[in-house]
Picture 1 (cartoon, helix red, strand yellow):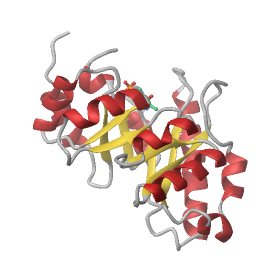
Picture 2: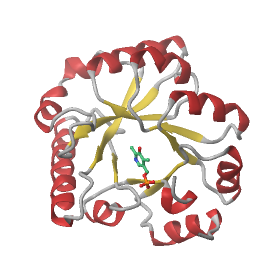
Picture 3: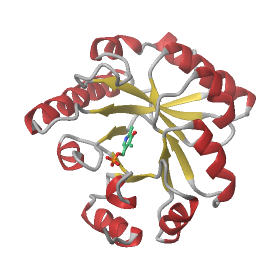
Picture 4: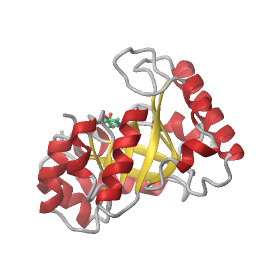
Length: 221
Ligand SMILES: *Cc1c(COP(=O)(O)O)cnc(C)c1O
């Protein structure tokens, strides 16, 4: 397959409404490819492994915003806390506690998205829909002064059934809206990270504000 990273990025950017941002998922890809995307103007990069973030981060420009999108073990938070821009994959209270603690040590605030488990697949992580709506209250929010709650992240079931994908995204948007309306003090709760190469169009139609695109930018893995 022949492709140019720049052309692929431009293809996505020209179709995106101004309220939807593009996260370039660069996992497994060499630094030279990220550099190419950077030179084409891309600033948000998503990785799913702590080790890869640690390896790539020092080799690239300091104005890159690094997003952690994969399952994160609590014992590894300390390695990314000093520089990570946003963690999309927050799937437990224990992890929130650790992120808050490490953000405090690094003297910064870390943006997080709470991951919602909507897919049929057992191996996908996240809080269930019911847990999410019960999670937020004033006490909970006040417990995490070094965390900025920025919204929700979800992965749909890997299926050809587009109705199912659409319904899954719809249900996340519903919980998102409820939380946003109930907690106006969460002034930065604005992001719905939904949609990958295969389902981003549906995700955008259902309210995604950030699509996470890997293979359609960098080629298959
Ligand atoms: C790999 C990955 C993506 C990107 O997937 P593509 O199908 O390559 O676009 C998006 N989100 C998460 C959580 C991922 O792990």
